[in-house]
Image (tube, rainbow, N blue to C red; front, side, top):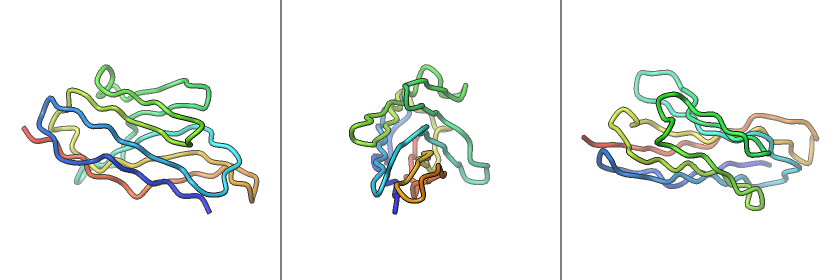
Length: 121
């Protein structure tokens, strides 16, 4: 069984930084893309950033230049370094990964439980 476990959320003042981590565990054959999404109260879940197994990254316009996504393939872990945080970044942040488990040997979409990020003004 595959799991994604996030950590690193919390409360920070505007202009501050936080680093989120998400570790995949279980019977994993291969991890393809990994990414972060967020959902603010009353809003739809939105893409924040993604990173493919080869390192190619993609960012939402709202976070470009402030957030950096990275991954450690040896640890099956993806990170999101968030700098210059703004109150509008306040949301629950979810880790997402396209994972091929050992059984069955086909890709599937996995989500973490979410971690709260609150930015005060």
